[in-house]
Image 1 (cartoon, one colour):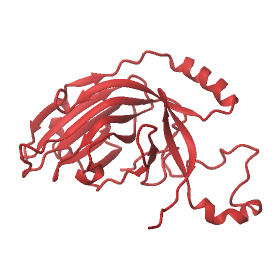
Image 2: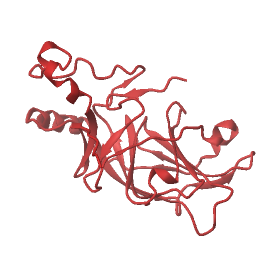
Image 3: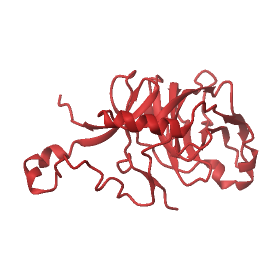
Image 4: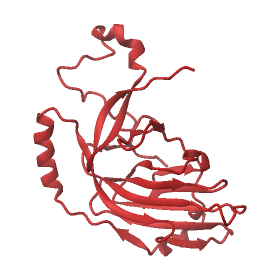
Length: 253
């Protein structure tokens, strides 16, 4: 199954910087397949679909973006919309034919190119796993586990293709009654622009401006070490998410 890639993805690593959170995190899932995929008959039972209200016209947003980018502002790729969903109050718990106990929630945002999730709290107990995928099962994030965000504070997961996204939490058989998952989705990132979906990984060639120097040409020979730290970042600024360029470095000591 070929997984689609985005213009802002760098291989398996998605670097996302929140203005409200200190630090930068590379989201590395531990892999795996959601257990519900083994039972196709369970797909139709995710009836608790939460439609996120979309109070704007994409054409109007694109017109605003054109003017803003002409003024030198970074490209806006998403608008943040309130969600207010949690594992405590929304979604469906079920037991699969194989005995796995799972929680699922289905989120929809009309005409979105992709959806990112912004969490007010994100805590996975020891042994628990969380998967996130699109309705077509062509893109899977995770599994995320206890060590993804052990302190349980704010968190963000990367964009998932399409206007629908499904979360599937798999409870551990050894999970104690006092150590429960806490998943609170505060907002969604409604992706609508600069999210070109490609089947290959060659997403960002030949899109730099005419004023920029190609790092792989003669003019860029003195910058070969620095280029290894260049990364794409998505920054949350106000009610929008913006595509920016950053530089990663490793702190010694």
